[in-house]
Length: 157
Image 1: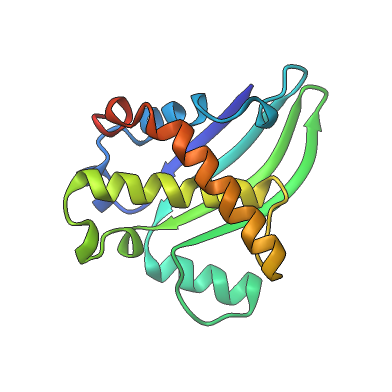
Image 2: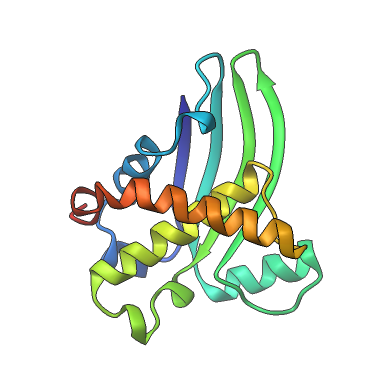
């Protein structure tokens, strides 16, 4: 089972996604089985934030003084017998809400894609080398296609 804690520290998010916790829980339902464990609870957190917070965290933890769309911090730590904490994802509202994604449907699709990207980082994917980039991109696309089948249900949330 996958457990997710969603924290919203920028209220602009709730203008586009009325029920963030429900929205992201729906996405997790459609992840491939290989990401779900029957023996352990996979736990991670998601912070829906802004570019200022992302820039600050990027500078502190990655030594990059710039904003970005998403940050992922893999932890992969067993916190109890049945609970495995895989890390944290932070998504920037400003990066999601650009002129190309003005309407809420495009905004939500972009958020879903970047959420998948962040989740894959927590599960060990990276894109430093070209071959890893291709592998991660292909997996992102594969997962998005699975989720896209249910996109009408998800974007109504």
